[in-house]
Length: 201
Image (cartoon, rainbow, N blue to C red):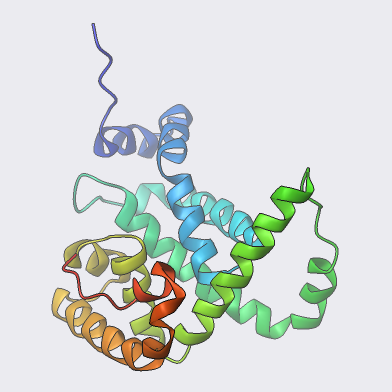
């Protein structure tokens, strides 16, 4: 008999009742997606790892107050991650000197190839973020969720707590502005041009 994994809604129902195993399965299912989202917003692997842990800790802490609006826990997780990123940026501004000292001594990866790959990915992501930071914060969030994470308008609206129409208008505005900023870099490859390709989520 083929094992059918439980849906998010079923696992979440168990997790809300204190079932740590069910919550662990949700973590296994979605932690990589949350981690990638946090990296794309920070361009720092170790910070993304810390933020991912914070997202799931906060989700577990608030589990009794969370009701899924659909079948997936992801929109809620994206919302928690977005708030966690806001808090991280505020802390970064307040404690920039202290964080710089800590981050100056990262744990080295196991081999040189991995280290080079991670550094290259961080460098490329920082270049992308430099362009995106020219946009208003709300536009940045919609762009990250709809374009990078592939959420539909309704899911992004749930994650950000805004109407669907707001998601649509922010995304259209973000794509237009990014296209103006990045048009000269079209030849750089798919990483940049994908940021403003007009696709319907």
